[in-house]
Image 1: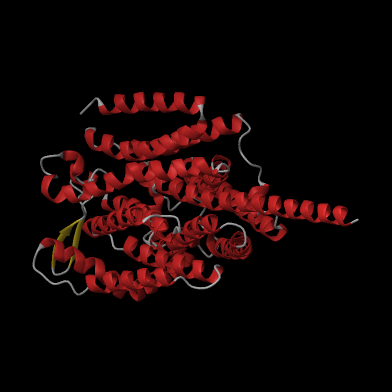
Image 2: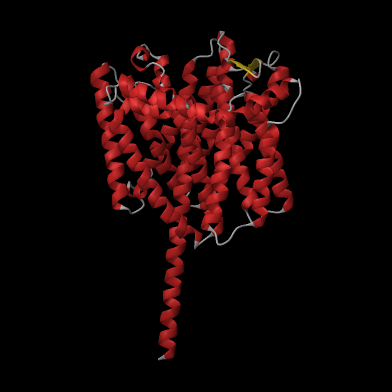
Length: 476
């Protein structure tokens, strides 16, 4: 359908007008663009790859408008007032800058460092933007609501793909249009990765997992009624089924990690354990284990069998990641080949670096090692340690101030950590710019929770001091 590019231009113009009017609504509109970029790509002859950067371009516009309105927080927000964390961030920025310059000089094209900068700095820019966006809790609620209203129905279209993908082209995986459809050889047969309206099954699985994770927050909210929890639980189950049909197992593992971390952190930070949530956790474990016991000869049973096998393949994935890490160090002479050399976007350029990178970048630690070398691994580890140290202190502070903020902050953190674990073993998913924007939004939401809790604590301390002062004056 040749009108698809025209539709994309019209939508871009409309979103640009919305962004100029109110950049916060522009950020919310990017959720719709994240879906449309896949749908319109399928409707365009030869499924051109330029649609992939659509969400990134519009996000850059939103960031520029917010910057021009002086809405963005300063750099100080990144290190949350901690000097050691500030030093770690500066070291990280210096590392990325050096390796971007290294990539430019070594490979003789600006394309390589541009991809590197997008990957290493894009989520941080999103974090700062979303912190400014979500300082008012209402805006973060609007974003999450819009994300769920758009992404849950879109992810559930995965159920339509097995039956209607041949008659409705937008339900097919994008690779099928150019003869490169993903085929999975598992469970003793051939399985297809169903993607629904989204580009590939892996992207559909990611957004289904994010949606399920955000819905699970409702189960922890003490003011949520039985009906609201029931609807959330039903949607979570449907989204899990959609993930199984994508055939992409890593997001099932990510969700398992998320739910364990969410439950553990909340109960550590809260005073006492919630018996109700122990029941939820036990039911979740029972369902997870029960999936592996499902028997049958239908296609659905084969997808369930494959999904359940993810837990048995963890050790194999870890061993593969370690091997890829060692291979990456050897290929990069331990110093790195430059930021961006292993980017998935390189396949759409005329620069062929695969013979230098090989398959070493298929795991997250391998990608960082081949691009930034051992110094990059050490710097990012040091940054991660300091971020974890400061975040833990801030979470303990939130626990004393506001339980609702604690639930949100812990959930965002657990979801980010689950994706870090997934990234460490497989990187393909995280080359998608809309995925990086989504993770940046979650990180910004976490920072925003800390910001609001700090303001609330400062207000409580002020009121307490004022009350004590009045009592002292009254007693005299």
